[in-house]
Image 1 (cartoon, one colour):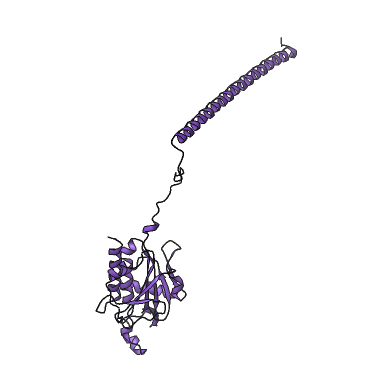
Image 2: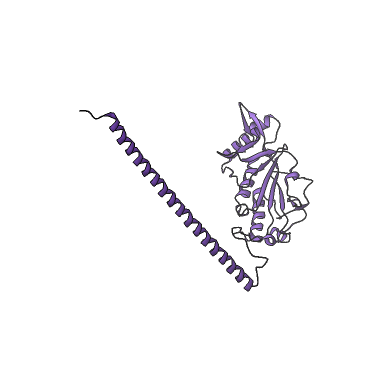
Length: 297
């Protein structure tokens, strides 16, 4: 015989009521546990605040006993750089004037003219091959950039002005090609595209800039020119020793085979040898004198 449906429904109601009671009991226990945890957190916070206040009071008492802080106390996390302003040395700038860097179309291609490869072309165009010596500027740049003065960070900039009046800047950290053919290719690209950027970067290592060069020179700098024809023959090391160390120095040299540089901004013309010197060797003497005076080994 089958059970009536009413009996079955009553048992379900009893089970449901029992489950509801169990759920309510579980929620009450969970609330009680959370309240206890919050009370413990509040107690811990109070303990930490009281201990921190006590430590602050102890530190204050120590400071008061020690006579208080001085004006030179350093702040934590803010390092104070040592003051070397009194011993700061001057920086230097090199300017190469009348550099023989000229581009012309020889045959079907543009090339940097030089006396070795383009003598016939130059004679056909009524030009003196002896005046086209881009290797002088190449050797002078190598001597400047390879010097210990540049490696020590004392070189600020190098400027080169060609015979045609084109002025460009060479960054002190650039690496000039060692071979002349590669140097000629770099100069050709510079004079055509007006700048050369670093590989994989946007930094311009060489760039053509506007004249005059005086607008790029340091303010209140001493501008010294060099010429064999000058009447003022000096020992470069002794002469630079008497120059103020807080003043920037600008050295102007000629990067041509013959002639004399004539620039209005040069304040003093010097001769550093009783014999005519190449531009590269003149640079080496200047850098050697600076290294000795500044103790750059």
